Image 1 (cartoon, rainbow, N blue to C red):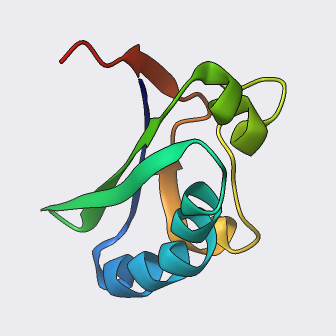
Image 2 (cartoon, rainbow, N blue to C red):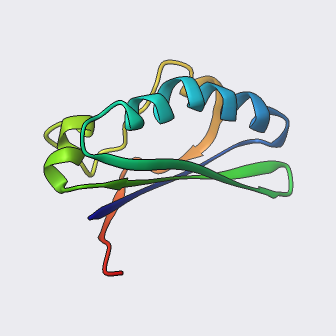
Length: 99
C-alpha cells in the first residue's frame, strides 16, 4: 500500500470554505479513482494561516498514476486553488505503508 502526502496552507478565515471546496474536488477525485483506499484532509491553525495536509492511501503506484498522471510526484491542483492557497508544495511525497 502507498501513502501519498501533500501539504499547503490557506488563510485562516478561508479554512472552512477550502475544506468544502476540497470535498468537491480533491477528495472526490481521490475517492473516485480505482485503487484509492481512503482520503483525508488534515488541518491545523498556525497564526493567521491554516496548514493543510492531504493524506491518501492507494493500492499501488499504478493506482496513484491513474489519479495523478505520468509524473505522480507532481502535485495535482484545481481551478480555485490560486484563490485559496497562500503556500503549497509543488511535489508530493509517497511512502510505502509498512504496517
